[in-house]
Image (cartoon, rainbow, N blue to C red):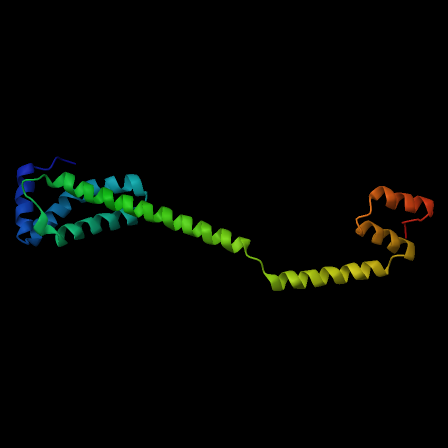
Length: 166
């Protein structure tokens, strides 16, 4: 990429101030490759870089009356593109944070209906299993569920000579 002639650039900016579309198109063409490469370094997406570049030049066209032909155009347009890149990246960060918050909130939420159905199903399975136990096995099971120390349950089994095998 060859350097841009500062006198030619000054003349194009002066013409742009007057609303000359061909001057705008020439500045656009002069800076397109440079600014696209600059944008791609940070955005890693050709589509995003193209959007930033076009948005910057749309802003230049809309605000052309504020341009000063005696101020170098290159640093001005690079600053616009840089600020657009920073705003875009900040927006992407906010979007990622929001997605993470939504994802974590959805994982934390409970489905009370599903939990109730599962609880009912598990209780039905437990009742069915308890029906197959002998009276002594049921007594041991009940003792173990009443927070009775394991040592007491084992002593009860030993003293009453209870077989836990079916």
